[in-house]
Image 1: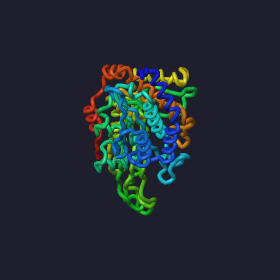
Image 2: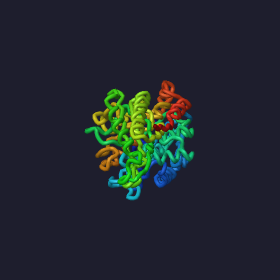
Image 3: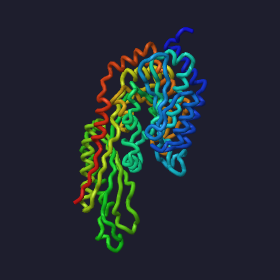
Image 4: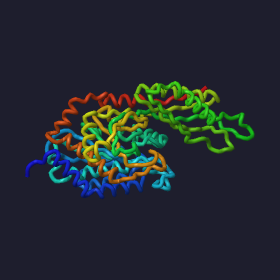
Length: 444
């Protein structure tokens, strides 16, 4: 049998996804109905592992607590391209698919990423496809992309179970991505109107903060003057954070959005232990670290104003994303062949954050979006409108791009690898992330 051309392999892979696509959509819907937040995705991991084992994909499981890595081999040696999906959910208690006990809900579409990752594996196993590729395809299910439940994850860190609070940074630390040459994944979004794919663009990076204000408890009715109100300290700090906003440059796209996770113990007692969490986001590492210093100043001001203390734990978050242009162009051409050129749009800068940004600093990546949802991202109305588009069309564009990269002796992948100038090596990345960690206590 003659070797297949690149276009024949693409057609065969897409046909196989059409033939067996129900398996991938079923996986996505199963995960939708059993949502779990980061580093807790035990049920989700089992469902995904069972589906990959059903395709005879060899797996390494339990990576960074719940993650996994499978591998498919081409017909000859060459680079390794990763296709990723994220295991975790958010906490959105009023979402129609929320877990009634935990409030966990897939209000960001990660369940579709897992379905499309499985569909890519299905497509690659079409007759004649893998044999025509030079290299390997890693299938990686990543825990904990949503940077939430900071106090819980900080407990995991302090107990030595993790070092970084996000899934992909933790996989980097563990050395589980050392053998990758490039990576991709597809995220669902609502809008822009008239589009099916949105590609390219950049995202903010972030630091996270876990904050504890301490005061002195006292009877709130009879002797509040004997107490030191930690909640007042937090409220003053919040106002001081707001007062900084006009000092940020528009082009740095700074976002600071604190929440109070513990406001006191009882209404009859002056609050003596108040907890906050916040992100400090920005377009560049320099921008968000400068903003972080201003936030720390505001937090100190709150504590000093009432005579209490504040402990600020600053945690490394995610780095800004940069998409590799040649990979973007390959993916865009494949997406256009599926949905039409008029339905693929380019992205500008987005002020959210993703740990795919961390990978983009050390290897070539793409992080396209499939426009298959409605509602507000991370909101209780975020729903997938078209599972065929969100799972199967997204997978087809990725599998076609993988074939472009690894066919013809992997010429395109090798050229991208040769030309890519990583902003930092793995060791420099880990040094940067570890250097962001600090804990300081301030008291009058």
